[in-house]
Image 1: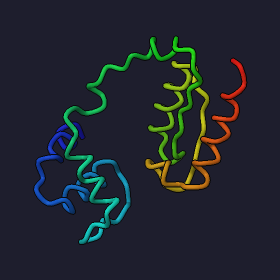
Image 2 (image 1 turned 45 degrees about the horizontal axis):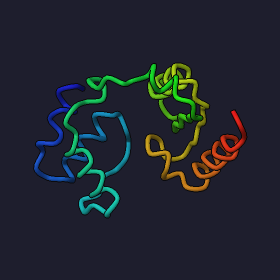
Image 3 (image 1 turned 180 degrees about the vertical axis):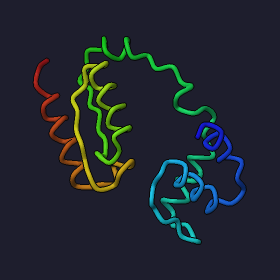
Image 4 (image 1 turned 30 degrees about the vertical axis):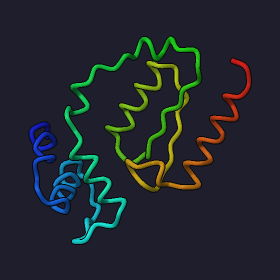
Length: 128
């Protein structure tokens, strides 16, 4: 998977790039021959990858020590992603939310995502 993810930005055609990405992450999403604007933006984002996520050192101790509320949201669609999100939330002292319906792109869940975020913001308005 590592080599595949690193090779994606070099694929010339956006449709093939996204089809390769979908295959790599084990998704069953169908990529159309003509990309609508959100998918074209997704292709640009994949091309911008300079390092794969597991090469990035996260400042988890500093984030955990920060005196502001934190929230980790996931799509509740992959045991692996859920385990990562659970671990992250635990390590930084974050609240945890699950929003089903759009898999890895939880903000696209619309009302469900907005409700989870609004509930978090409302709870964060009260003194810690």
